Image (tube, rainbow, N blue to C red; front, side):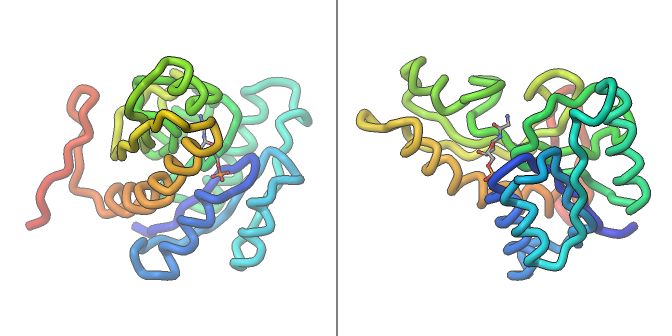
Amino acid sequence: MNRDIGVLISGRGSNLQAIIDATRAGRLDARLAVVISNRADAHGLERARAAGIETLVRDHRAHASRDAYEAVLVDDLRARDVQLVCLAGFMRLLGATFVNAFPNRILNIHPALLPAFPGLHAQRQALEHGAKLSGATVHFVDTNLDAGPIVLQAAVPVLDDDTEDTLAARILEQEHRIYPEAIQRILNGNWTITGRRVVFRRQA
Ligand code: GAR
């Protein structure tokens, strides 16, 4: 089995960069086969091009339905035989057409300790709720929003003088650390999903 991955982005692409950097540093044994953005102006596309990775722009607005759009993404990724799809700031909801094409093979990174604060503006939600801890979650993607089995999490404190930006920056540091690690552990195999629990077996 190859260790090719596809990364889906919509914007800045700092998590994509962390994945690229981890492969270069030898912390992540994976090959980025393709980076797909739903926006032509996503800065992450430049990061991918600079790293010599194939890029595709697939604008959701060019398709009549979500299913039609997702079918295109599925074709793109299958044509490249990717083992794992990594959502990295991809700001589109994915439905059954996409999710069922890659069962237990889609990861997402979310800037909160799920199941707290799913959806948009997770850092703002944490501040407004008065949470004292927040963090980052890598999880499998199912058809519910930010709801699939959790692979890795990291917690950070919420400080009294935090703004949305300072909290987001503290969380982002952890995102960049745990996303490549989670990808590596999933690609390595030796894990099972029992109920909602992702359990890593010890390597022999
Ligand atoms: C990251 O903070 C990621 O966790 C978040 O968008 C940002 C993308 O940044 N994703 C979500 O909120 C998904 N619900 P990046 O483009 O620099 O990686």
